[in-house]
Amino acid sequence: MYDDGATLLSLAPELVYAIAERVSKRDRRRLRLTCKHLCDILESQVLHTIYFGIQYNDHSEGIARLQSLAATKDFSRGLSQWGRHLHIKPIHIALALEDGPDVLAREELIRTCIRNALDALQNLKSVTWTPGKKDKAWTHEIIMDFLTSRPSLQMFQVHHKYLRVPVPLYRMQDLQEVIFIGFTSRRRVSPETYNDLARLVASPAGQLTKLSVVYTSLHQIFQFLTPKAEPPRLKDLRMTRSFIKLDSFTIPHLRHLTCLHLLHMKDPDASEDSDISDGSTLESPGGLKNREYRKGSQLSDFWSDLRLARIYLKEISIDDINTGLLGYLACYTGLTKLVVTRRFPSSFLPGSDALATLFFAKGLPSHGKTLEELTIDPHFKDCWCLGEDSMPAFSTCTGLRILKVCISTADLPRARASSHIMEKILDMVSIHMPRLSQLSISPSTAGAFHFSGPRKIYSLNMAAAQPAIDCLLEYPIPLSTIVQFPSVIIWSRRFDPNFVPQSPNELAAGDRSRLRYQEVKEMIYDEE
Image (cartoon, rainbow, N blue to C red; front, side, top):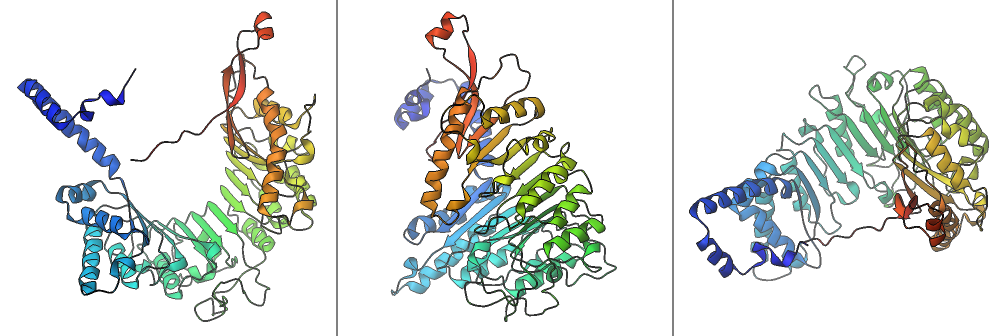
């Protein structure tokens, strides 16, 4: 058996040196070349993704890491050659710059370390940045200067909540993906940043294919485009807490769109938007003060307009179900991914029962042969769950690889019964979904507990999930089946098919092996 304690590298340096003395010159040369080649391989893997930042309570470690990145010659050469992805964490330097006679010298040292560490990264492809609340403004300025000097940069993702300076996106012409995250912060992105983004979208040299924005509008993003301009190459658009409207101005610029995510979208009929944490609104200075850019439409009208424009998507993620969306889904085929989530806390709006009936009758079957990933998370609405009424519609999805659904707690008997919804689901999977690799199931908590606290809902879900788990563990998987049964996740617990030991009675009957689901325990690895 392999013993980590007996490896050559675990021995004392003196012993390693003594062993090397007894190895032939040819073997030493071979060992050196092997180690050098292995070093090159590991260097490309270890330095592929770089993380740095300075923690508020332990600034010494962060500063030491920056100094190492900036000052080590061989390390910097490796970063320049192999570094592709950079994650910038909060840079909390307040404790490192406490009052003292050398405070200016320490600040200049940190400035130099940050600049030199960033300068070593010459071939970056992506940057993910999470600014911190206690970051100094000058650290953000240094990072912005760095970002605009990297022509190889293709993806930029930033958590906008604590951004202290505008992002000069227009000077980052080679970007292919721009992602703003952190919509739960309810803080606006600066108008200068979005104006620069609009210039980037309208730039002739722009290569932007993926865009994720918060607190804005489609008209603001497209404000510098002209009617005769070549349509942007935008394929993936994700908007949160924003306005969207299709008209003669915006439709021509969405011809390449294939993926659309719309979450928590704004109601254009609302007088103002007061859900921004600093007390401002989208109409206040710094928000969408120009009503021209605040254009929006009801989502039902948006989907109807998209259908009339004959823009057919391959991926959709939404938290609002309406008749316009159902009409859009029923008018074509070709959707590969559909994610339907709840808009908490209101869940689905009144009338969703009738919408669910239409969805399972016409919307979902239209894409049954092309869907590869389907998520429906109704939370409290049983009519959207996977049950006997909706099972025929799910059965049309024969090409699914990933299925995430809820099941009604009413369909989960407390005692083992001859007929169980889990058995019917697994039977459906074995017959109609031969390509399915992952099945995720969550219990739909009863509507009576809609306003219960998180702990109450969690305990209810755990209690509701246990009957489903019990049924899954007893489900007999035929040994002769040609279908590979999927991994099943029930309320964050994963189960895989596996051969399990037989009971004495089963062995006496001659059945020496059986295939059942078994829980998979997560493997935890220590990071060194």
